Image 1 (cartoon, rainbow, N blue to C red):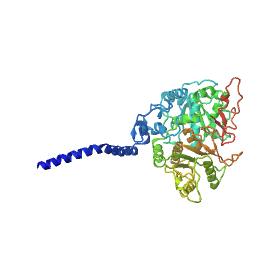
Image 2: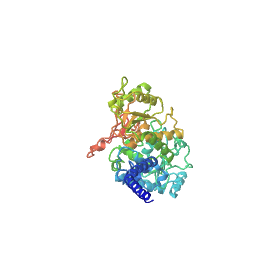
Image 3: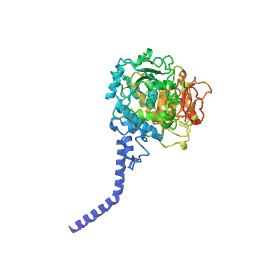
Image 4: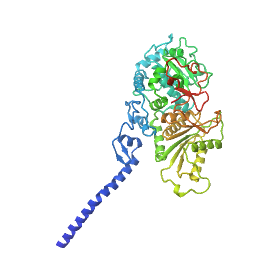
Length: 528
C-alpha cells in the first residue's frame, strides 16, 4: 500500500512537471488558433479600428488610419447607418492627403447651412412658398437676397457622368453658399448615403416644378431669359444645342447668386472652368492646394449605402484581399470610336507589359523551376460590360507561365453586356466596381470614360490611360495621366473659359492649374 502511494506521488509529480513544461507551447498554439479565428471573423474595418493586425491587438495610430480623413468628414453620424463612410479609408492603398483647413471650415459651415435650410425646415417651406408665389422678383447681380438659396441637381446619362457632374455641382454650391438638393430618380435610389449630418439632400417629391428630366426641351426661364423668373434652368451638358453658353462668364455668375432657385442639369466635370473664373480664383486656391478636388469632395460626398457596401466588401475579401498587388483594369469601347476585341486586348497587353504592370507569358517551352515565385498571386480586377476579355486574359495566364514566375489571378465582378442606366441594380453593380477599382494598387483606364474617372479620383492614383483609336496625333498604347482629376470633355462652345491672359503680378502657378486632357482633344483638366 505504501509502495503504491509512493508510485502515485512520483507519477503525479512527473505529470505536473511535464504540464508546466508544455504549458507555454499549449498557450502559443491556442493563441495562434484564436488569432486565426478572429482574423476570419472580424470585418476588415473593425480590425483596423480596434488595432487588430496580423493576429495581435496593438495600439491603433489614429494618424495612420484617420476615419475622418483629416477632418474632411463630420463625426456627427451614426456609424452603423452608413458603414462605408468611416470604413472605406482602411481599404484605399494610397495614403490619405489631408484637406486644407479652409476646405474643412467651409464644409462645416455648409453643413450648418444645409441643416438650417434643408427639406423639412421652416426656411425651406418659405422658399417653396416663394417659388410658388405668382409675385415675381427683380434680380440684379450681386449677393443673394435671401438666407436660403438652392441649386437642384438634375441627373443626366450614366452613373459615371452623374457622379462627376454631382461633384462639380456641389463645388458650385459651396462657392456660392447654396444648398445642394438632388432630384433622385428610381434608378439612383439606395446607392449613396446622405452626406450631410442631421438633414437630407433629397429633393421632396412634391417639388412644384415638374418633369425635371425633360424641362431642357423648353425651359421657361434661362440665362437668356432671366427677367422676373422664379428660378433659372441651367443646361451644362456636351449637347451644345441646349447649353447655357454664358454660364461661366463673370457677369452671369454674379447674376446667378441673386436667384433663390437654380435647376442645373449636367453630365460634365465642369470644375476646371470654375478655376478659370476670376470670381472664384482666390477662394479655390485656399480650398485646394493642388489638383485634388475630386479626391477630397468625392470622398466627402460618395458613400455607398450598406447594401452596396456589402457587395463591395464581400467581393474584396473573397477575391482580392490576399493578393500581393491588385491591378485595376477598366475597359470601355465606344460606338463613336470602334475597335475590335483583338486590337483592344493587344493594346491592353502592350501597355501593361511595357509599363511593367503585368508580366509577359512564355508561350513556348517550360519555365525554369528556379524562377517560380512562391509568394502571393497578383490580382487583376477587370471591369467591363463584356465577358470575352476576362475569358481570354484568364486563359492566357492560366495556360502559360509568366517570365518572372508570378502567378496572375484574373477576376471580373460582373458582365452586363449592355449598359442599363435606367436599372437600379445595374447602377449598384457599377458603383461596386468603381469602388473596387479605387482599392487597387495601380489603375489602367479607358480614355474618355467617365466610369474610369471616378475610381482614379477616389483613390488618388494617376492611371495609365488606354488611348482611343480616334485620339489623333502619336499612336501610343497608353499614357500616364498628369493628375487624378477627371476631364471636362466639352468646354468648347461655352464662353469665357478660353485661355486667360496672365495679369500683372499674378503668380505663374495660377495660370498652370488648368491644362489639356490626355484623352480628349479640346478637353480641360486640373493638373498637378
